[in-house]
Image (cartoon, rainbow over all chains, first blue to last red):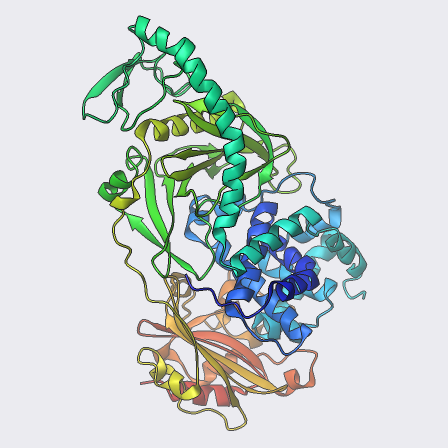
Length: 165
Length: 469
């Protein structure tokens, strides 16, 4: 197998260091299992290496990683062997006592998969719906719809003003 | 609410150990050194395996061989395979908890095995979870799967084909990755979920399959083969603390290959343990895989090419479905031709930077799009103007999937349909001036996915009209 390698190990490590938490959270939102999350994070950064994609800025780099991590997870959860294992349940497994899971996080993780990434990018990373739409390459109206649906669920289960910044 | 969510997310991050593990794997891949990881595994395994094996051999010489000589109840070991069938009593066989038969017929081993005590219960180590690649998982977009018919599967790994469906995974350059087998007829249902066992077989120097243990794991010996077996508890959803679901797994080296077996089960009646025990014994008894019997891989076409606009229009499969008319204000963005085992598509987009963009994806259809075909007579399923934002308050739940991403037959397309998809809503001024929209068009067996922001319905319709027969 020929591997394209245009970045040095040091550069890869720096990119990993810059975005490791964000990529891990996005993957965790999809995979839920710690071990599958690790696989997905690994695959995401491996794609970075193989693609050898040049980035115009750190923001560009970050956006690319968000989208790639999302696609890696989507591909992973729809993979044929996972379907055979009954994906919906298997992917919800995780090793116990690794993170402190509070009530809010349980509610967030209970959201439909397509909403979780959007919620993370909006509330945690601070992107607006237009930016999320651009990153995830979805219509902005879809992103807004996802957010509104997620807010409704969160408001019911967590309470508070959904518009609070 | 934002602060609550931020606080909760901030607790989710990889530990230092996890970071080191992931980064080392990534860097190894960067330097194309998959063997290093495997060698680490090997050296670890060697320490775990060699000492017990040596001790076992001594025990075998001193204790077991005399017993074998004296006893008529222990099977005579007759390597290599001579095609005959021996009869073993239940005590001599190896499937505790699986069978109540007085006698079961087992094939004579296909390779030399070490005589052991008549039963081989696996020692189950407590684990913290898998730290490596799950069986069947492969780097996305880099590999493909080839299913093995029963006769080929049997030739590759004897004894599995009647119970397991087998496939081989390869890199696109033809390099073998692993055999993956999944149980076909298991009726094991745990908490309403079908739970077949799965087996991964890989080169010892290929993809390692290891498991995290808090302490040095105990090794079981099955016909003299060292096996590390273990289990770890799986939380089934975060709130379902009462769920008792465990991952039972075992790894061992047989011949030139690493084997990993995984299954999910409860702990009631030790069923998971018994299933694992049975499969481990079945494989070891059947003998190592013979990958020289693998059929030549039929490598699917692979493309991930970035095309110019001209090259995109010249694509022999999909170029003719690109719009002949493109609004003058939109510039060509990029085009990507993707072809692999899962996808066959041409992705293109045009944009007016900062104001408008339209993504035009052409590909072979996926079954889900057939499920979302909407008749133009069912206006309530696709007309976004009939509903207020947010849709959650206004759209019936049985319609939401159609409304979110409908598929129209090409012959039913019209400006009216496109206008019905135009959504004028958003925070940006441009969202109110021009709509966003998304929908799919099925033209024979080709699916065209359209998503746009800031492009008028008339412009989108003109683009569509330019491709219609």
